[in-house]
Length: 334
Ligand SMILES: *Cc1c(COP(=O)(O)O)cnc(C)c1O
Image (tube, rainbow, N blue to C red; front, side):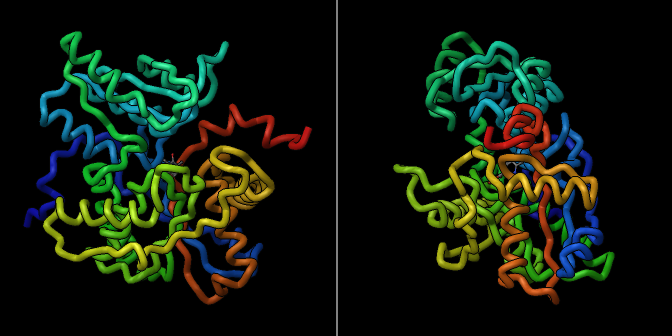
């Protein structure tokens, strides 16, 4: 039977299901709890990551609307922008990226990949959240192109469908392996992953806590993040004809790990990156998954998460940013 989710336009961009693995060496080192990892760093599109799932629905919508160009924005080392550039190339679309900062002499990490993937880059100085997207979309329209605006982080209700679907995928894997989880944890920043997982966990009855680890401090003018997440979850539910409402008071957000701010690597991230690399051979990234994994480790250490639980960590990708962050990862504090 076709569900409302099956009826949404969707482009095939990645390899699914992503692996569900157990971090048994890490668990043993910590003395518990049991920790599972959902490998969304292995979605397969140009080094992978959580944006592949969102882009399947966003590119589906762009193609259905007859557009010929994707436009989006973010920080210079945005994983979302790199994935969008790859999604555009794989779908025969042009791609324009509006990036914060200035052009460096030599591109590295995600920025290098953006260029290899053929994206056209517009530098926008202080503005790293795609604020100039409407202006550039207007210029493209005036030149006769038909741009589709992919929102910052791919996070609107259409993009969030990717994580409603991811919850269904996870539910099936857990059932097949007779596993149950008490909590799922993940890095939460532009909100599409979080909102999609809230709706999907409800819809597919995963019966676990959905805990986002905040990566960004609330910035002036953005409004409170839980209110925004609630609104995005409700819009996503509406798109699927789900009547349930998701109140901001019921949203779990761990927001005490934002450290010195977005993209600033501290001891928390360095330790987590090292621990996962040396105990599991898994690379987490300096901006998102290193911070979220560091938070998970602290919450275990503080006894907030107890040894008898089963936790699931979503590895949302980001490893290409390890390279440009080399100097904060090795010999920090110089
Ligand atoms: C974008 C991103 C996130 C955050 O996901 P949102 O849906 O924006 O909240 C987490 N991890 C990585 C590696 C990302 O690139």
